[in-house]
Image: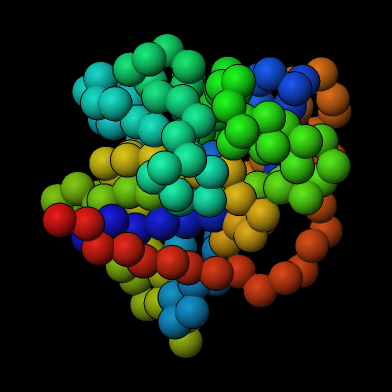
Amino acid sequence: MLEVRSTGELRSNGKTLTGYAAIFNSEAVLGDFVEVIRNGAFRNSLQSGTNIRALYHHQGDALLGTTRGGTLQLREDTKGLAFELALPDTTHGRDLAILVDRGDVAGCSFGFRVRDGGDRWEQRGAQLVRELLDVDLVEITLTADPAYADTTVALRSRQAIRSNDTRALWLETCVWD
């Protein structure tokens, strides 16, 4: 089962987007449980050389870049899963640069599958908590509705803008064959 999570702000210079698709140790309330991504959760995916896609709003036909093509660069640092995306000269790429510049699209999401033993569930008082420790990263997505509000996306030539948006966080689960 592919799981999808969303997060925060974007930056762009019209041709390149940079930001964080996931932030470590940041809690997201996802309905009946709280989820936390732990440092190193993406390490095995990044080291495996598996092709990871960048999409607009989880739409497979809105491809923006890939790690295999070198247009999407991903790395883990102490903050989270950082990315740099060279936008294509396509309708989706040009439109997305404008939407990010205007602040209409200011968040990121990621699609993943949990590896065997890659998560830990714990009951903390009345709250169920899931820690993501090792996931198979399939995609990052640029979105207007992130679940993890701390993620960032921005045009590279502009300062990151922190949002105080208190909209309800969302969780979308997809099943892929």
